[in-house]
Amino acid sequence: MENVVAISRDSSEQQIPSLTPSATSPIPVRRVQWRQAIRIIPSILPPVSIFERVANAGDLEAVQAIESMFNPRLRDAVGDLSLVPREDRVVGPGAGYIMAAFTHLSPDGSRFSNGTYGVFYAAQREATAIAETRYHRERFMRATKEARCELDMRVLAVAVTASLHDVRGMRQIMPDIYHPDDYSASQLLGGALRAGGSSGVVYDSVRHDGGKCVGVFRPRMLSHCRDWKHLRYVWDGARITDVLEVKRLA
Image (cartoon, rainbow, N blue to C red):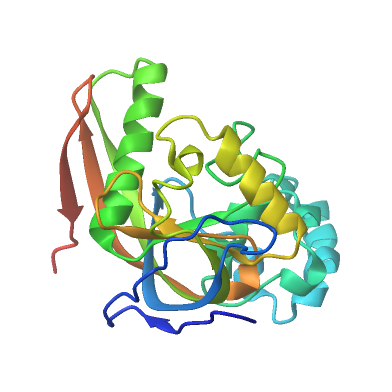
């Protein structure tokens, strides 16, 4: 694989060349190794225990079928397992959080998905993850005209080890994929890359200057996913005014 650069979470960023992707000069692929990428999800979404308990990913469908006979709600909790190819499925501690991103789809899609497949989004830094989720939570709360409330959020730490298509530093030459609200171009790019066998995309955060994010297409590129901390987003009816860390006192 050409232009492969190892990127450590603690190392300085490599200079990304300015090039316009084309048939003769494609989007470069680089090795990304972030030991503690950050993903923030609502705390109401617990891990799916079946992924935590099964020792062999090849047994998932059989175990799901058996357990669903006694627990009809299990199928809803697991989501659509058929969306994830057998060779990409993961099990064990933390796997429930990883697999949920691929088995529970948003019909509205996301930056790199049109809603027909899942993407696991994470940021290299906590501040970037907060900025990204804060924007999307505010957008949802305004659309549904929610009254003042507090939103409990779960912060996940996860290891990312993958060779990803790298569009960092390309905001000016590929402005459409960095559009703040219109995801049509980035969804086309994500769909084309995924169909071509890509493991995902590493890109500049749109909500946090200097921040880096990944959109991973395959669960097996992720590991060691775990609860790290809990946050509380304070919604005043118009915007999220504060982000607070929640700690359990001894």
